[in-house]
Amino acid sequence: MISIIIPVLNEASFIDRLLTYLTENFSVDYISEIIVVDGGSTDATPAIVKNFDPINKHRITLLKTNTGRAKQMNFGAKKASGSILYFLHADSIPPIGFDALIVNEIKKSNEAGCFRIQFDSSHWWLDLAGWFTQFNWRLCRGGDQSLFITRTLFNKLGGYDEDYLIYEDQILIHALYSRKQFVVIDKKLQTSARMYRKHGVFKLQYFYWRIYLKRWLGADADALYKYYKKWVA
Image (cartoon, rainbow, N blue to C red):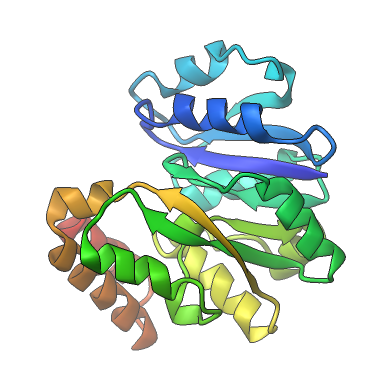
């Protein structure tokens, strides 16, 4: 069974839409629970989750922990009951039948992977970026594409590295690629282009590439976070 883990911090604009979609589209044969892990929201996010009233409300749990997506996702994983962990951002909507697709890959001995991505934007660069995510190349990966992984493999790798306040997804994905244990499901997950709209497509892409290059050249977690706080956050 799958435990969906959603880290949130001030996601009042997106969390109700995501929970509505998930509870209307998941199969009780595959999904054991939805765990929302709040990292200290100051908006209505916790109240929205707490008061959410779907048919399957008993399957939704709100947890609270310290800020930091890696910390939040690790905390959710520790509390999860499923043998498969599915990490999903609040502004991302997985494809119809996502749960069955994940289970099918696990049955084929693919212990970790993600979906292709499609931004909620018609900008040609973001269309191109999304198109490239169909290829199983590490350079084309990111946390917005979501991540499914067996609990056994997640624990073996030590989970997300909590030293990283950003880039934590890439650190774990790198470990998975090093083990040749990653698959891309050929279905599109839709995610928000809000950060691109905020900064401008090419400007933000430049910042992201700089972060990737800095890490490749040996920058530590603190240096990456300082750059992100200065130019992106």
